[in-house]
Image (cartoon, rainbow, N blue to C red; front, side, top):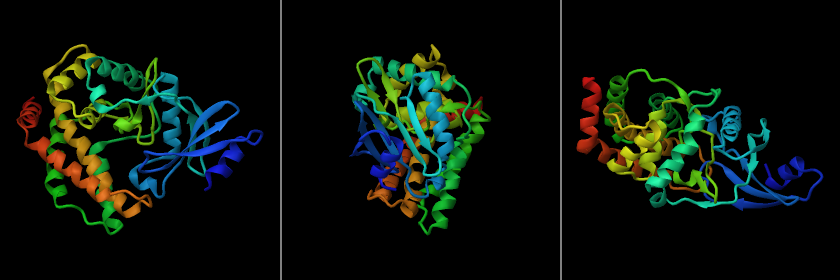
Length: 295
């Protein structure tokens, strides 16, 4: 699909100007300027259903995020082509070190929590099943599963048993730093393709580990979100940081077999396996898992 021809279809009475946007490692993103307005045209990558992406569910999540004031306005959705168009947010990146500040953590919670508390969306995200699905898809596409996956999956099963069933709420599930945009008035969250009904502690842990929050920062995150730091919540956040990196590592593994984009997915997977190994070896993680298994 050519972005120029898609833009011409979407704005038949205008003269859209299309320019590529960098940063994506799954999809192709373009800025479209037309009639004094700007939009983001996102063309889904190849075989992204193997990553657990449902474009119809993503559209529903993006609409819900816009209603919550968390994400930008949705302008159009072409279901057959897997194309989503949202309003371009005039803002700047919010670097990880900035988002670790207490005031910024409060802004993240203020942006994310209304979506968590909003209407249900038509998708499910279970990090424990996601990593298993990624392993199966990678093997089916001839990708070697890293040896580290074996011990990591055993530890994931311990975490799942220790936490037990959790209520499912709308979650973003991909809170990488690139998905935050800061303007003068608010913090926006973009890219809802992995959104689904899931565990709020996965979302919080996903933000935490991707922004390298330390324990004191996590305590601030919990106080902002829940009003108080409870020991069981702190333990849940600590162990789900491991699950966030395991999901990210296995995402990198399966991408090696399906992606057509030029990116070092093997290196990406290795980086996250190394980080989850460090997480699992830390006293904080071991204490948190013990707390959950003993409760």
